[in-house]
Length: 116
Length: 159
Image (cartoon, rainbow over all chains, first blue to last red; front, side):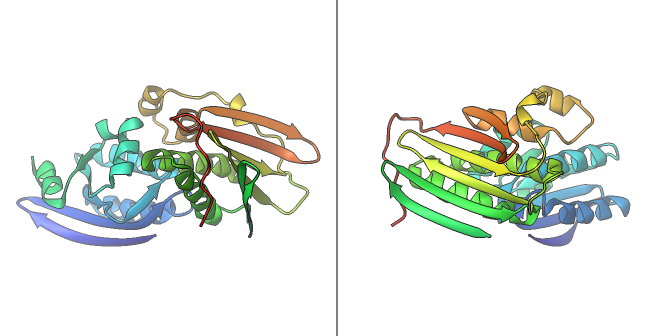
């Protein structure tokens, strides 16, 4: 798994855009967790995940997303996802994650969702 | 890791993959399931669901597998039958049956403050049958079955 982070600033908002490449499972999720917790620990509570090149996510990865969502929600932050494949999006819907974490079609929509 | 592929043994395609009992090899097991299920004609979402189910079954082995008196390994055997895919996970760890664990509903999972416990939900939700057996000489055997949706279909073997 490869993780690329980019900082984006909008009016009064600093957003961390994180691109995740590969697969997110019991073996790889600690890497992403370390990155995301690092942002939270340094006060960056608005995070967008770019899943364009994410091929797979297991329950360990889904659990991480839920935990991070809860953590930043407690700090008035938000977590959004965009560019998710149709198959992964279907899994997200079937398991009920889509009603907890918003999945946006593209980066602009994810940024708009954060700003609103 | 050892991999053996037997194409078209009678009406059955069998794929056997043996990997070390280590989460770094989960992707190898998922690839075997993904390729086999795709060849059988399962749609992309179902293929992903089957990969998730086998991932959870094998992650359980890695997490709970202790007490083995043989080198720790997971053996995945896939039986591609005309109407169903049967995925057998075998390990030599101490007895562990996921069927004896309480399965939460998705609502209970989201209401709980925990982020673990989704694996069992996934297994139960994404396959049609789950069976477990244990023998002192051969260890745990967990069998997950998924039926093809549109009746009997000949399994397609690799070209």
